[in-house]
Image (cartoon, rainbow, N blue to C red; front, side):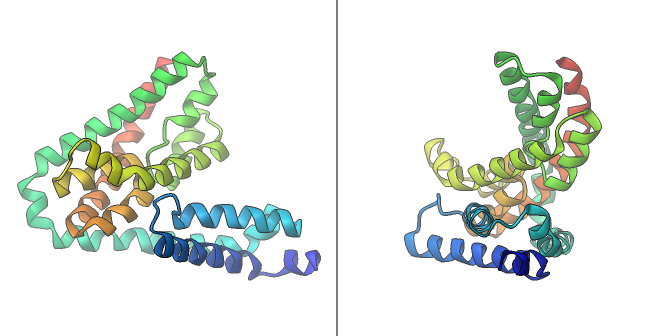
Length: 230
């Protein structure tokens, strides 16, 4: 049975989709932020692989095809942004200031905690791209001498946590402006945060989509500077 599953091309795709659908069902049914579909699907896939004793390599033979959909899905984020173009133009300075501030806060917090906990240079470089999309973060981590596999994990955790706590943070700090919400989510929690922003509203989703791209570009430059501080 294990051999059959390991050799199946569709095994990885199937359990990934089932895990995500299970997460969507639990979120709709229980209406709790902790039941994030991505988080549930990760836990589900890990559990299935442990139970069936199928290795990650075998699982990824099929699951890797899902990653091909990331590029067109990312491009589709431009649609809500285009629909809010007038709003973007009228608030351009504030939006760019917010994104730049978010990137500096992200890089600065990694530096502070790395100094406090005496991280090595490799560990520090691994964490620097934590708040940007996986594709860019992996490249930055590898270029700066970080541990790419851990970078991917940290990026996913950052996005999931941002998605879960987004609404609570906005309520606590009384953030009501949709542009501010979108910029914050896209800058701090990349694509997973953008999914939450789109649930909040069209403006939030559009601004978050913009923040993903701009924050990624700024982080490429900022990380190459911050990496020299430790």
